[in-house]
Image (tube, rainbow, N blue to C red; front, top):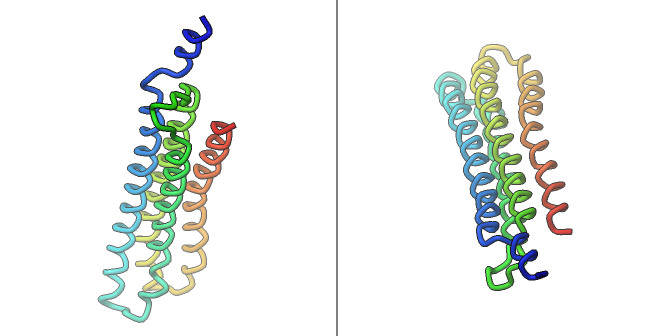
Length: 165
């Protein structure tokens, strides 16, 4: 009787949910980072044709976009580290859903942060070419976009800590 109850708590598809969390973290987080990098890179390429001396300072949005992918990678590695081989049969449905939530939180916030960084980076870099006083404002807005991904990372880390205990 106790074994039947234990089997209900550890269904065979539970690790699929955890692996879905890994996939969602990497897919959405990297799509956000790629969009932010590409969109900002378009602005940097436009600036480089007119003012090549501003390129190094204009790389800030690209670096910030890359950090979004690092957030996703950290969570994906943590989730994968908590996964157990199927022979041990100790991965519960609760852990599967928590790991799915971890991946979705860091992935979707990374997607939103990458979108924000890309839009602000493209427009901000082009504006910086025309007026250098815009630089501090652009960096502040980029930080506010980046913090969206950081919030998702924090939530994912809290959820991941909950699943291992």
